Length: 435
Image (cartoon, rainbow, N blue to C red; front, side):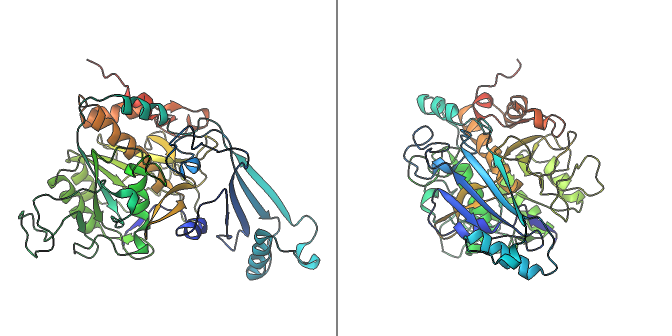
């Protein structure tokens, strides 16, 4: 099994997947060796990104800092100062600390813990609100766009994805016949290439793809979260290539999914996974494709430390393919810097997008936070889909050019990424290509 989804193993995501979203979100310590606890909070006297100023009909929009970041968020980490000779004991102490229980004096010691806070920086977001305002006010022609989410499966029955899922109009549901002659029987909304069936949704193992789909095109102003693109015109094709709770997959499944996507009308592919192994067949297939590929940059080396993939011996593919029809995306923190685990490289990784504590959809009609470059790529995919639908004068090459040439520059990203910046939806939507 060669491919793996690009999701950091934060237990917060699992904790909230089926729970109620509230103003403060605690998380169990996710790594016994590092012995730490975390919380992520929105100010009690502020709406954070703001239901009033972002998407008033979406009750969870206030927590979608990647869409609008007003600087009102804070990440608090409580860290054990000392290496404990008993990792289990250290874990129990940290759990007690997280839960607010009193730690026995003989265990706590002098200054056993220190607190580290990371404050959000206003404007570290994708600048979607003015883009939405322009899009909503313009009643002109729209192009229908199909997005292939090549990932785990997708919970296509999630209420927030109603109307956003691609349908194969040439196939008759559940008749056991390959009506359109494409080699796949009853492929109504996509295909499961992991198991070679038409069952594109299994269960909890499909939260990763569901989360990506929600970021791209969840229904806006319909409760819950706000997706970036308009599901009336942007349709998501579910192509499951990753399976099991660990999100693993094989090269052949990925190759077949890309072939299927192109043959069935997809324009843009979101690929939020990767491998350290170089596959020439995959590179050639992508190079010769007419589609635009949005790729996650990868979440670092085996220790979870972000790599400069320009110079490191280890690479992350397909993000490290140097192709003219790809955009590779790093993970932006809410303070305007790259997340420590995110890969980077001015010669390889193109742009950054929010990918840390991203609230989105989860399998089973749920919601949850996830973190990783897997979350960053769908941000760019959503913007690309919106632009391609709205700017009917644009080719896919124009969409790519618009996104890269209008990246909002940040000093923290200058020596990290090819563009030195963050995706800017409004600027890209209004990009004027050279005549």
